[in-house]
Image (cartoon, rainbow, N blue to C red; front, side, top):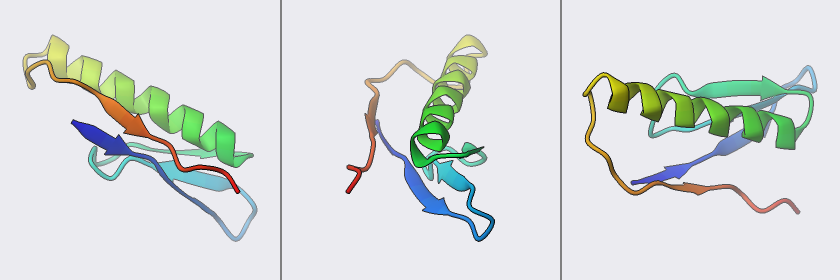
Length: 69
């Protein structure tokens, strides 16, 4: 399954990153990289929890991170 990390900067300067394919997986960070890293870690934790509780079958994981300009 493919997962995408989307990011945007909030008006207060913080960065928000989320994985749209996994509802509720979003994270804030002081930088874009920090927010994306936190969202990736959270996504992996959610996937692991689903596997541990037999809520999902194992599948190949591909996480796409946007290229920084």
